[in-house]
Image 1 (cartoon, rainbow, N blue to C red):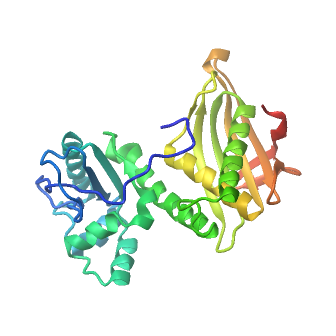
Image 2 (cartoon, helix red, strand yellow):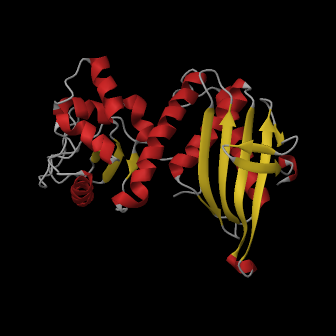
Length: 306
């Protein structure tokens, strides 16, 4: 979780060192191409792909990613592998192992999906690095697996946004894209600041060539202004706002949730505000709107929020 606007970056080259031997051959593979400095994993990163559903687990059986009898056993063994990796490596990251994505990747690059080297290349493929999440000991079947699924979806949206900006979102940013990113982050900040303390969800949708750019994030804001939001969700929101402003694309945003705090005797008020953009400026919506099933009234004027 973070209160800043930039997620931590993942190096393109990672190494899992010696493959852990924990009852199964789960989708944790040694990645080639990185020089091992020390045998204990210090200074190295460990990357693992996780099959996030029973359907994906069954589909991947032909590739022998795991010897587990079912998906529940697979998740237990995967949790053991990740826990072991945290003891041995400085950095442990994971991403959703999506069978369709993997099959298409192998077809595109002429790889045999049953070969470990194919899985290595897929896991650390640079264009997909935005799908990687740092693993810090969370319950795998609790919040972390849903976050892996969202990270894949977010990563696809980030690639779309980057393509709209001619690679300048993650490559060499020029002044125009840099300014648009800062403006987008400021729009997000003012929406939250005007809302005050509470528990919210922000949804943003921008009409873009190639399909709608969409982002959503749950946000907790304390009375002192401290904000809690997942790094990957914050990055996606800022990227979508940036692409919309840089390309002058129309969009809609809805902030809804429970306004208030425990300090106010536990008073919470349901709220839902909406803003629209014609491409250059975000302003209160002209009237009631609905975004992804959420109804909202026009929001406050962002320029009045300091």
